[in-house]
Image (cartoon, rainbow, N blue to C red; front, side, top):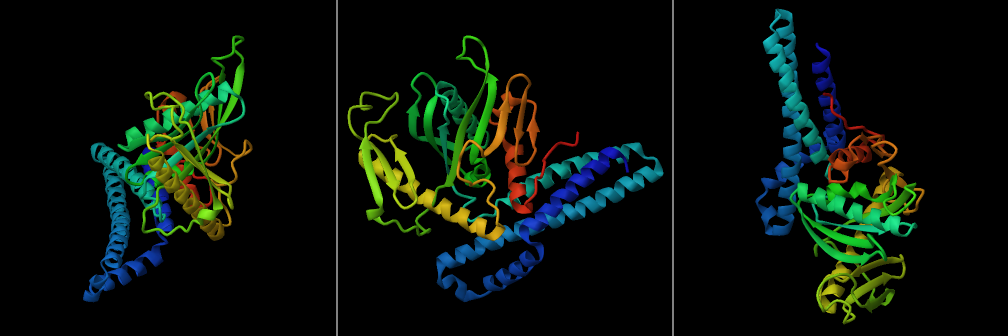
Amino acid sequence: MRAEAQAYVDKINAALALLRRSLDWDRALRRLDELNARVEDPTLWNDAKKAQDVMRERRRLDESITATRAIESELSDTVELIEMAEAEGDEEMAADGTASLRQLAERADGDKVKALLSGEADPNDTYIEINAGAGGTESNDWAEMLQRMYTRWAERHGYKVELIDYHAGEQAGIKSATLLFKGENAYGYAKTESGVHRLVRISPFDSNARRQTSFASVWVYPVIDDNIDIEINESELRIDTYRASGAGGQHINTTDSAVRITHLPTGIVVQCQNQRSQHKNRAEAYNQLRARLYERELAEREAAANAVNATKTDIGWGHQIRSYVLQPYQLVKDLRTGVTSTAPSDVLDGDLDSFMAAALAQRVTGEAVVVEDVD
């Protein structure tokens, strides 16, 4: 088989292996049989919520298993077609088979990423919190660049974006910002972005045009609904109010409408100032706190299950997950997976899917998995 076709076959087989591993294939088949049997039980609908949960799990498993089997079948048929065409010297048929493999590889990659979004909170909306590191104006500007990058990424996926909290830098950029992304699987895709992001460039704020390194941290945690019970003891909270900052009408900086809540046992701090009402800001900050505590619980579960928690270490400048180099060369490199891009402008414009897909795959395999084109 020609090298191009073989490269597609290898890529499809790698995706299939990851699909099977993420599903825990044998267990998934047994579980689907169990769920099919439960659906046939008329008493299931005596508890509507329980029935909906069963139907949702059944649908997800059935779709994943069916998609995997379909790719395996099409791969086998297409490889057989190409081998027959090559044996008969039919170049046109062989080329058509290779084109089919390319399309199948793209589909397998898409199904692989969907299968990786199997976490409890993956379908949920998500908060993304960005904080500038030490370095004043340089880091503040970099934090704002990250805010724009994630906003552009969200727009590419059709997500709605809300600015929950914002603290402007003294000269430029931002000290911190919290964004809310609303859309299917927003948390599932974004969760691998937590960590420290490093920028290397010629500083636009340095009259001597020296190269500068800046850092900013990103923290991702899911929005949770009322069905998830997170207990919060009011006596363990410190609630502060302050005047909202930033542009936005005469209400800004005139009343103590912004709210900051500190959870004393964990040290988690959340804040909100996007609403005019202190009551609404308090409610939103409380939602953020529940989400942060839930994310903490998910991280603890993952750490216990895998003995590794690659993306949720304590954020410090020694825990970079990605470097963005604009000078002296053009390169973005994920330090966990090895995925690179020589088009930083595209990445900073929201082209993050290849980085996210590789990081999601790594969480399943425990190994660095580089997602790349075979063109």
